[in-house]
Length: 147
Image (tube, rainbow, N blue to C red; front, side, top):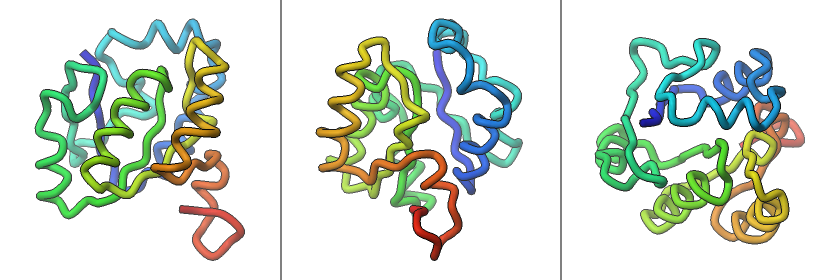
């Protein structure tokens, strides 16, 4: 079972993933983290942050995620993760259908099929979400980038 964490400032999470070295690990090592159900300590949610256990590919399927987001007046989701063609795609499609505002952090996504990953990031996702690099996402508002 994997877990989905909500953080008040997603920029902190992206920065911590880079600074922890998690994203610099080989894909095979990152893939081995899947299925363990453990969130690496460097990016673990704080006590005040909500964790929603998920059991299917999409973060929405079989969870109370949509209700929790709506109850907390959250209308924007930032997606990143391993399995661009699985978890990220499935969650993005359901979130777009539910009219959430979306951003995908392209250099924080990975897939075993690099051509499929590239197709999704460059062709499919942009019609439903802002597709940004981590650097573009964390730049302060008013600069040349940012979300």
